[in-house]
Image 1: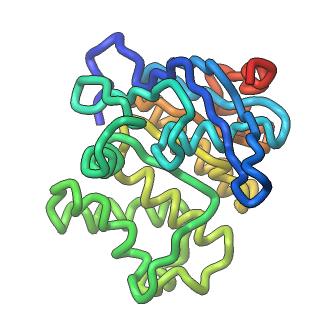
Image 2: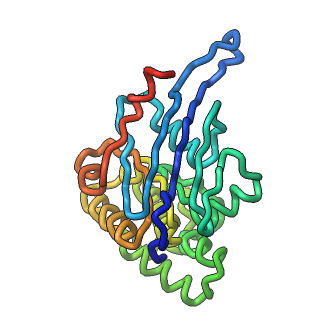
Length: 238
């Protein structure tokens, strides 16, 4: 991945609002945030701040396209042009996620009977990387994340939470996404592995990745954040 030759933001959130309607509770409406605006440029790691329940995860899922907003838009720079992921077709969203927008969570969606090495190799093969190169890069990534070689041919369903999280990190960082959403990526890791992930984040930023993150570990947050974005500032408007 090379830094985009552009002064455009990689993510531009405009006038974003989100309401949840609880249909099983008399259509009660719960406002989350309103008129939220955010720009994230290549080389930035913007960390979402605010107390628990303020809407940080909701904002991340809206940027990724899992939640539809109640108003506003989320533009992601894809193939050199901003695309509003809130209005994109399902096919466009899948293409953006395959080539531009990654999501690293603390949980791995375990795929039965697929080996760890194949899981980490798969994102490269999907993007046209030759099989030999994809294999070598996957091996290097698993070694960097200190996942025992004896585990590589096993599906990660029976791994510990920390090992599964490292597989998830490997799958996301090996693809070298231009835009990454980081949702507690070090939550289940020990200090040594947290330091490795911090190095991966810093390396991706140096290559021009744009990131939005949630970190409850303040040491990790302070190590990678280029600035904080207080989501609670948009709560009072909701």
